[in-house]
Amino acid sequence: MKKTSISSRLSVMFVLCSVLMLSVYGLYLRSSLDDSLTKQMHNELEFRANLIAPWVSSRASPEAWKRLDNKLTNLVEAEGGRVKYWIFDADSTVLLGDNSLSDASQIPSTSGFTRTPSDSELSSDRYLYTTFTSFDGENTTLRFVVSIDSTAYVGTLNEFTRTLILISILGISLVALLGFAISRMGMRPVQRLSSQAEKLEAGNYDQRLDTTNLPNELQALAASFNGVLDRQKVAWQQLESFNADVAHELRTPLTNMIGQTQFGLSHKHDIAELEEILGSNLEELERMTSIVNDMLFMSHAQAGERATQTSDVSLKKEALKTVEYIEPLLEERALDVEIKGDAIACIDCRLFHRALANLLGNSVRYANPKSTILVSITMDASDVFVSVSNEGEPIDPTHLNRLFERFYRVDSSRGDSRTHHGLGLSIVKAVALMHKGDVFATSRDGVNTFGLTLSINHPNQMENSILTKK
Image (cartoon, rainbow, N blue to C red; front, side, top):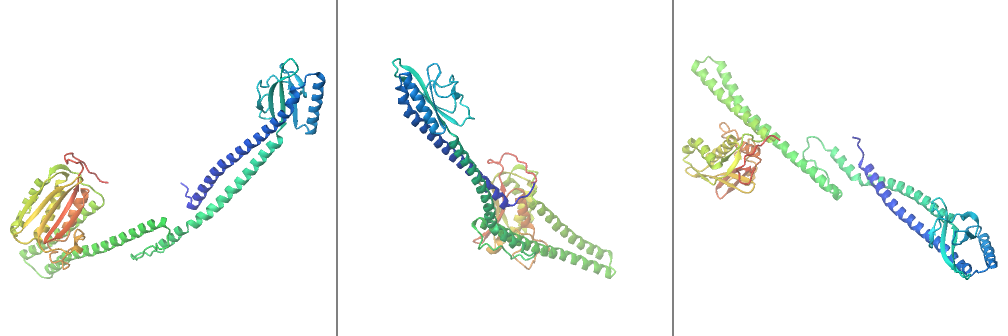
């Protein structure tokens, strides 16, 4: 498809609008002028007919008709043949007048205006037919015809039409030129905006478009573009942080493996010592494998993959299964779990267990000993809310929105990074995304709450739904 500039398209729109307006206006003016000229011709015909009619009706003798014939001939000659007169009897016989209108069979029997007896559009003459009774003692019905040459009127109309067309063409051309110039001037802010965008340097994430002097129509566009730059900056910062976190998480097991392997190769060891070294290396490899698998799982969720193995289940029933799975951790810290509420939701049970286990594991690690962990299941018209609350140290609000980021920890020292690599809550967010939901976290009055939402596919939660990849 051929690309055109906005200025050209605006110019074409201006031209089309001007053509439409000038056409309507021109047709109206020409029609008005035509009506006015026609009325003038009709008035002129009526004036001459009313002037001659008394003479015609009062003629009763042949001598009077002869004198009338001479008078009409003189009138015709005086006006250069522009006006003509005829008188017909009831049998359409010409009593007075030349033979140019000898065929009067088509003359209307009633008074009125016409072009010619055949109503030809080619003639420039206009006619007025009048019927009256002659006072010759016999009440003879006569028809009096007056014609006028309308060449001057038609010429005026044609000249006006030509002038109107010429003015319209010049006006349309002028509108096209001015429209193009105005549109180019109007597009200058867009060009300046494009120039600013071209000058943005790669790697400088603090650059933004200047919106101070932009017109209102471009303010929203520039603000949206700056918003994209803001989100891009956040994304790059997260990517850099992610790269650093991945490097840190993988460097530790790699360093341990390299050190242990070098130690194993530097001296002779018995079989038990070598087995211990290999076992330690295997633990590090399993930890690295777990990190990689978790990262792949989250990348699939962020790429739009949805839960596919879904079914309608009781969330409370599934939560009880998850609690039984982590019961050894609960006993270790003398913690109890209470489950409140229930809902029937269409979910992938395997993913739900994984997300809830991570939420419970997070609460177990940071809950006060011998306290109770509360699992709450609620729902509204569109979502199911599953939250896990525990009593523990309050969390600063600045950390709450970032706790579901990969490798993010409130404790920057990473003291427990060997056993927990900081992806548990990120996996919860990935599971929520795969169910078209989201995550949330609060910390109030010594109670920390983490949870996720699951989108409802049917109001009563009883209809099975199949979610596929985007």
